[in-house]
Image (tube, rainbow, N blue to C red):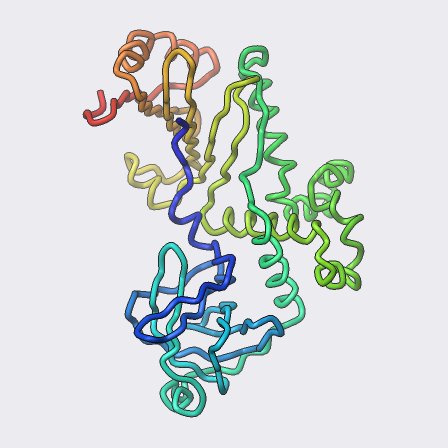
Length: 343
């Protein structure tokens, strides 16, 4: 079975899809339907002050918690009065939930003078609507289709680069590149946002389309959520085929500055790492992590089968020679079997 490469950080921006009627000491819970891109520190049992910024017409409200904006589901039977709330964190995983301790004047007094007035702009409301619409359909990582049996390494690299570039994850930066004359208009037309634009229409009709429940709203919401995840985690999750009939999962990640410095004090070269998971017919499950810094490559392999690990070590010279022919230097190769130390 292909291991799941999704990271906890990537799940940090996911909301709860449905209103759940749960109780904590007799209190109904408010589920977080839409979370901020960067969550503030929250601990189970912590009491926090919240200010209602806007009441939505679908049993939801927009609340400011620790200077971050949340959309909360109000369960049936719960009365939320006033603009100030006193909440207790009931759960942070798998979903974020709050117990309502008190609301109204008492909570306002508890909040003190440190609270601020918040006015949610139409653009913010529209983005919230998009994210909520995106949760109505299951989102999947961007899909790629390669053919390692027929494509050369250079062709595979170009093909992968093209599919990632046209995934819609970097659409706004590509619009800027087009405006600067660095990208042709045809390239923009091949991305999902441009293809969906005909169905969405202009900004005047966009909210009407959301209200009518058009499927395109969910697609736009999923795209927006993926973009927020990439921005927050600096990871691009992919899935698809390494060659016809061979599923794969891949995560491309840009290393942070502190991670680069941890590798022998690297400070100049930008480092990228890729994690790849395959379930091969003859070799079994295999997870690979490839780290590229400049022209130097570090590879870590974790096969499910001990025989596969021995086979990889026996052909390490072929791997090193192949990388050298491509102008890359193999700085390290580790093969780690499940439950054993790397070799």
